[in-house]
Length: 62
Image (cartoon, rainbow, N blue to C red; front, side, top):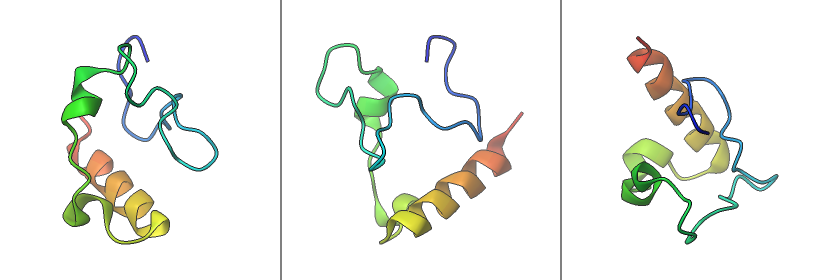
């Protein structure tokens, strides 16, 4: 997303299975490469991950 991904907006690079379509490609943003999918951020299920990440985004919106 050229201007960055706003909080609460789904990344345009996620496929229907919530996997990154540009994983491992040079155009993938450095921030995404540095992201560590730890249990405290992503939980143990897809549903928990979406809830946790949405909560973090909402708490850090400026």
